[in-house]
Length: 126
Image (tube, rainbow, N blue to C red; front, side):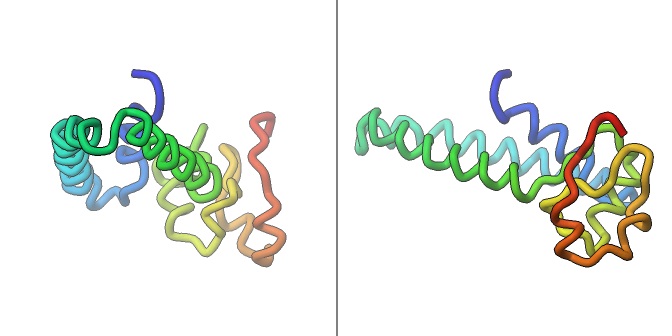
């Protein structure tokens, strides 16, 4: 697949805590397939009532919002263990940062105030 499709499968395997991961992933998968089914039936209705231009314009707007959301609210998890990812989601570090790097822990950043931690950027060379 090209696009955001594979990202959802990757995210759901990483974002849930270890103790609930199995059940949470199964609920997320069922939810994903449910909304895929809904869109399968809604799309022809949208084309019929809105026309193809308006339908795809609506999808373009949704896509722009998704890109914004991913950029600002989904943290980088490349090179992190599942435990580090869980620590990232349970910490007080703003989620719009990529404060955890592959060789560092969240505790290394706890002494930073919120403004400083927001300015942290992911550096793949670390």
